[in-house]
Image (cartoon, rainbow, N blue to C red; front, side):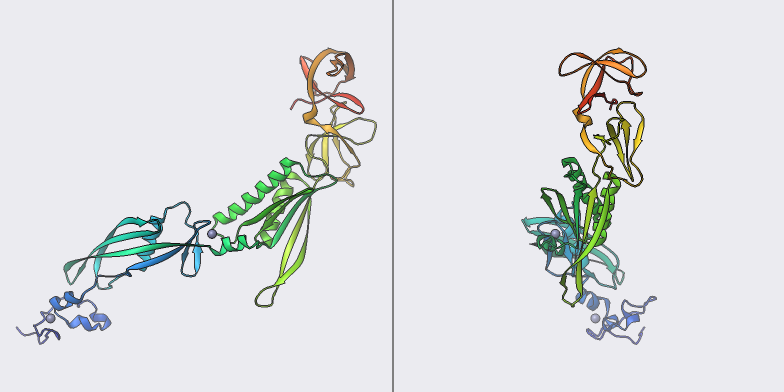
Length: 368
Ligand SMILES: [Zn+2]
Ligand SMILES: [Zn+2]
């Protein structure tokens, strides 16, 4: 029963097989060995004894090769399992390979991975165990390094026409900037970050990684808070290739008035409670309840004087309704009954109404 084939290592006859031997089709030299010699040499898994995984101490990003990846809130055991999986090489001749891993935290920065593999080669079940120590080394990722270095290509300056933006407007603008950048970051964009928020006497500055995101943030702020944006580039430096690097300043100018302001447009019809600041200032006359809109030419800059705020209003007793144009209320300062204009939003059955004192007298405010 000579097949004419003998193992080149031990000289035993090698029986004929219906299927080609593992590696034979690739011309592998071990393909000619008998099963015993083949399995003697066989390594199911090729694994390094130790892997180092750099992790950013600031944001937790993990470096793989030359790039950093955000891994979210997962703990480093998952990171260690992934790194081990990527570092392992399973022999191409093995079939039905399965593996399990038992991670053990050895010290704060080392996870020991006991890995157990099973597979089938030359119809023989094989198994192998190997241990990989994954060392977590803490460093600084490219993004955190840039943030620490003050890197930014956009500066969004939030100011207002003829006034300082309110604390509420400033904190909302900063919130909008963080939210916009967080959305971009969530898509995996590691170049999306807010570098710094600086408060100034006349407003707030937000430094943002890219000019495009600065533009996006400025648009969100004016869409919600009103106003306009002008942008102008400034040459800041040349990069290592000698290309000019520009930083773009987005100067956001919030409108002179905000919803809730009471303004006096200077005509004879009395103060206006501002309700909207889109393209023009809109509001309601406190004397009549009629709608008021700034002229198209004036837009967001009507020639008006601020006379107070909705929040300055105080509740007082509605004493009597005189006629279609007047009611009597208790003056909250003098406690005398005074006659004031009756706006059409006034509820004649109400027991109390909010009133606001302005230079021109007492006015009934709409309910909030
Ligand atoms: Zn042999
Ligand atoms: Zn980082």
